Length: 198
Image (cartoon, rainbow, N blue to C red; front, side, top):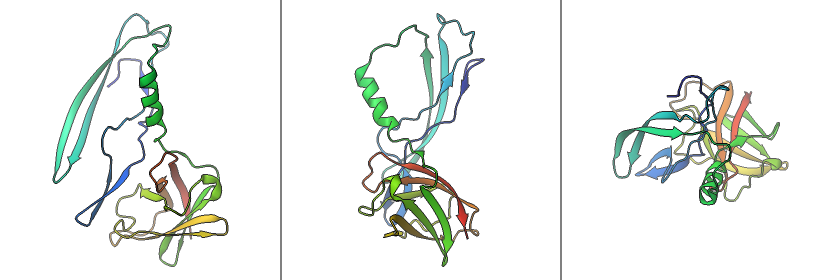
């Protein structure tokens, strides 16, 4: 919740991780998770007065079992003419920001539906390699068979991954959306939002 006149952009999530437990595949996060959002105060906000920012968080904590949780967070924000120096905080924020997927370059990623499989093609310029292969996290639930690893191979100077449709999939979508992450889990993830050619 924001004070009157304040606006916020969409939450920017870091790329997720893939977890396998007793044959069940899930996507999520571990450890500390930092979400970014651009918050703009009104033009006439008096700098000397604090603004109270609030957030309600729902989460699911899993280890051997999963337990739902929630938290109400409050942060008092004050305007300043100069930014306070916090080198350690800056390093932590820069590290977290590097895990937010960037938009894929124009033409660097494409997708098609061939021979009953979804084929994701990644041009070399996107910076992904076949070893270890990248991991794709689809936005749509029940689209891909997450328990079956895709086949990745190099073809005509690009990287192609062939994905098996889930038995729960209801047809094929017009677009393929998700996040593509380097196989070693390093920063460099990209957002995928492309037309699914047929």
